[in-house]
Length: 194
Image (cartoon, rainbow, N blue to C red):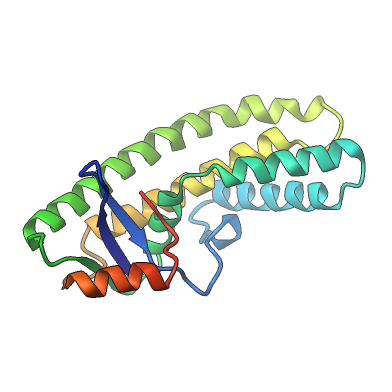
């Protein structure tokens, strides 16, 4: 897995993953470690299938709403989920930066993202019973399905970041010349901005 370090005009750092040929991981990508993850993944798949097959105006509206919500998920989450399965990570940074600074910034980014996903994992998990009670409403329980999806997604993102922080994935930092970094960013679209 290759991640580019980009500095924006406001001197902010951005970590950008190169696009993958395989689709991003989702709830079906979970290796269930307990009955809860298995149950959540199964329930999400059932709700998603019933929503995809719905032909009523309400079903189509809920399908559009779900697509809209999924479009607003932070792209950094995809980056962290990709780290779960990465055999190695190459951090490509401009040669004008020093490796210890890039390493420190990347590890700080991981710690902040793990903290964020841990907090939202707990919040979404605590909301599961409330959204489960919405089963009394007619139609598919999109509220529970979306919340279960977010629980699983936060769990996967947290797992990816923790795996890198624990040293289970070898990190290599590769300096790039100005021409190489500009040419690579212009020639291929990069998928994940953090």
